[in-house]
Amino acid sequence: MARVLLVEDEPNIASIIVFKLEREGHQVRWESSASAVLDAARTTQPDLVLLDSSLPDGDPFDLLRALSPNPPVVMMTEFRDVVTPNRALSAGALATVEKPFKPTQLARLVAQLAPAPTAGRP
Image (tube, rainbow, N blue to C red; front, side):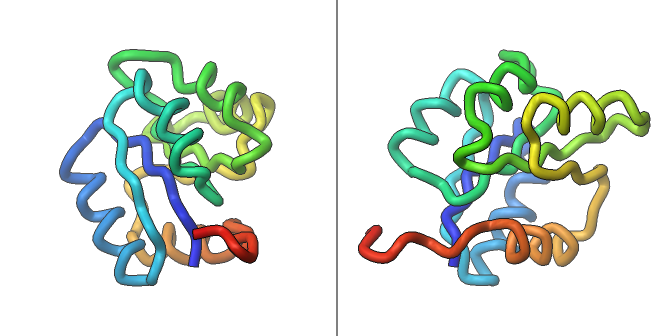
């Protein structure tokens, strides 16, 4: 399955996502701060990044531009507007997901969007 880098500052939300994705067979690394994301992406080499649209210590849109298109990024947002998803897609997000979402919905999206791991990668 896929290597997923989860960037979520809310521990309760993160634990639900990690639990569901690991049950689906994915490897998940969770980071709660913007400051650790780029280093985590370099060391983890994720197949997909799930990025929260509001982080307390950095601009997620700057992270999105730095990360995408490789690895692909899905932005998770609690903002119920059209501006945030459009801004995310314009900045390079592959997709957006509106919070709250069902863990099964997110797991399906990860399965659809995460490319198969490269042969020979540990």
